[in-house]
Structure formats: structure tokens, C-alpha cells
Length: 372
Image (cartoon, rainbow, N blue to C red):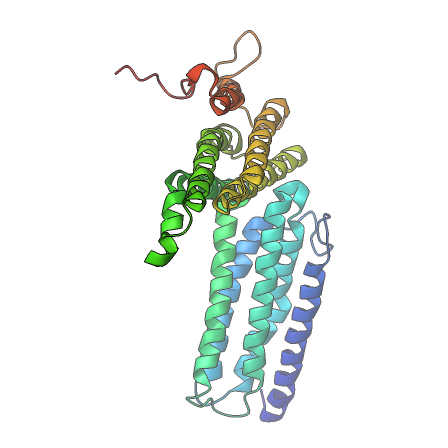
């Protein structure tokens, strides 16, 4: 390519690349649930295409970065990289991202794909703009910015490949597990919390300790109420993660392939939404008690119990649970149904513990009885 044609090709390729990035980013910002118009019946499945596009993009970006920081500056070589991005890599990435719909891969997974694809385009645009500013050899002061921009695109591409490897159901399982861990951490925090220790943190001077004894009695009474509410809340909330784990293991841990049925996709999205709301409510219950609000704690604790029961009931009623059908009895219940039913009964029985009725404590039905 001659120097004159190179001088023309470089700005054209640069402008085209940035224009495509803006166009594709805008398309990804629009809600959609229909396969992209770029795809056809002969198009490859979206997940392998997305992974291949991300791998190819990372390779092209590596070349672009090296050309941008290496002397002498060669616009024609950079134009070749940009042309490859414009002609194949970016359209393939766009096709794959828009072919992943909420009906075929769940809304949760679709949103994550869109988020990562947009981040990739954004970071790629920043790198291309840096390369486009070159009028000559890259200085030592300019190299770090190019290297940093390249690293961001690499991370985006790696995340896309990991997301593809995880798959829609695997991603839902991962997110549900994260909510479960948040609930476990909140319950543990509540169990370890002592209002008396909180008071000790704010102890004043000796003169302040000599104030009216009535104030001390009031504080001890308040702490007694907090401890009583803590005990009631713990008895309810410590059962919540156990029930969530039963759902996670027996209802969500079912891989059905690259895509899922529309009904299964909706089931998974709804289940994850329930996990999220339970996690938020348990966190509210713990936080309000630590702030001394026993009424809000009791309300949130009751809500967490009801939400957990609703989660379990939805697992029994849905036809999209991914049942294995192992060990079906005369009532049409399989082994996994029975685990979920036991968890439901376990959660319902918590009212006996909260009320301290006759001092009864039920044995955990999902664990073997302690024979000691």
C-alpha cells in the first residue's frame, strides 16, 4: 500500500470502527427478546459465537496495542487490524450478544451478556481512540495509557469467555449461591451480635457512670428486649439458608444444555428474584435489630419466613423444576419433591420455636437425628 493510500485508509478505518462501536452500543441499550436480524438459520449457536468473537477480539487488540506503542508508527498495519474488527469481529460479537434472549437463556443471563458486551465496546473504543491520536511514534509517557486500555479489553474478553463457559443455568446457580452466602453471613452476624458489647463501645467517663440508676435499669431492660428479639429472630432466620440450600441443590442445580425452554427460563429468573428478595429482607431484619428497632426486626423476620415458604411452594407447584424423576412414589412425588416438602414443613414449624410453646424444639428433618 502506498503512503498516500495508507494515509487515507487509516482515518477511514478508524472512523468506521468508532461509528460501529457507537451503533452497536446503542443497539445493545435497547430492550429486545427476538434474535438479532444479523442472524440466520445457518448462523452458529450464539454462545460458541460469542466465545469465539471474544477470543478473536482479544487477539486483534493485542496486535493493535503492540502496533500503537512500537516504533515506527505504521498506520497501514493498524488499518489492517481495524478492518478485521470492522468486517468480522465486531459484527460477530454483536450477532452473538443479540441472539441471546430471555426466553432462550433467561433474562438474568441476557442482561449479564449485554452488560459485558457494552463494557467491551466501551473499552475497545477508548483503546482505538488512543491509537487514532498517534501522529508519530508513541512516547514513553503515552505507553502506559495504551497498555492500561488494552488490559481492560482483555479483562472484558476473558469475562465473556468465562460467562459462556458457565452457561445460563450455571450463572443462575452462581448468583443464587451468592445470595445464599449473604443470608448465611447475615445470620452468623446476628448470632454473634451482643447489644451489651455495643453499649460498652460507648462507655463514658466515671462521672457519667455515676448518673441516675434508673437510666441504667432502662438500658438493661432495653438490652433484655433486644436479646429476646434476637433469640426469636435467630430461630427463624437460621432456618432460611437451610431451605434455600435445599432449593439450590434440588431445583436449580439442573443443567439442560446450552439453551433452556421458555418455561424453564422464566422459572429460573423468578427463583433468583425470590433468592434476592429473601437476602435483602434478612439483611434488613439484622440491621434494624442492631439499630434497636425490634418492631421492624420482627416484621422483616416474619416476611423472610413467608418469602422462604413462598419459594418452597413455588418449587413444588412449577412444572419447570428440572425433576429427575428418581424414586417416584404412588403419590407422584420424587425424592427431590420430598426434600422440598420437608424443608417447607421445617420452615412452617418455626412458629413453635418463636413462641417458645412448651419449650418444644423440632429436630431438623433434613439431617439424621443425633443418637448421642
